[in-house]
Length: 131
Image (cartoon, rainbow, N blue to C red; front, top):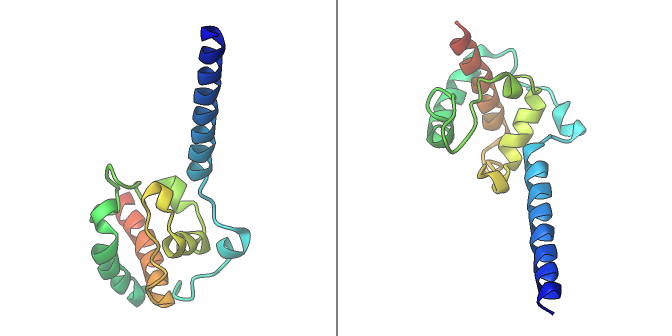
C-alpha cells in the first residue's frame, strides 16, 4: 500500500515537472509568426525617427533592458546576435505582443509607428555598442 502511494506521488511529480519543462521550452523559443516576421519597417530609411525610438525606449523599456539595451536580471541584452539577427518584423511583433510568461509586457497600446521607432532604436543601440 505504501509503495503504491509512493509510485503514484512520484508519477504526479514527474508529470508536473515534465509539463513545466515543456512550458519553459515553449517560452525559450519565442518566435514571431512568419507573416509578422516578414513585415518591413516603414521607418527603416528614416534616421531621424530613431531619436523618437530612443526616447520611447528610455520611457518604456530601459527599466528592464537597461538604458543601453544591454539587459539586466529582468530582461535580455538586446545588443546580442540572437536578438539582432531577428528581422525588424519579428522585433516589432515581440514589442507589440509581449510575452507575459517571461515578464515582457505588450506595448500594443502604443501607436504602430512608435513601436517601429523602438525597433529602430534597438538596432541603433547595437551599432553603438559595436564601435
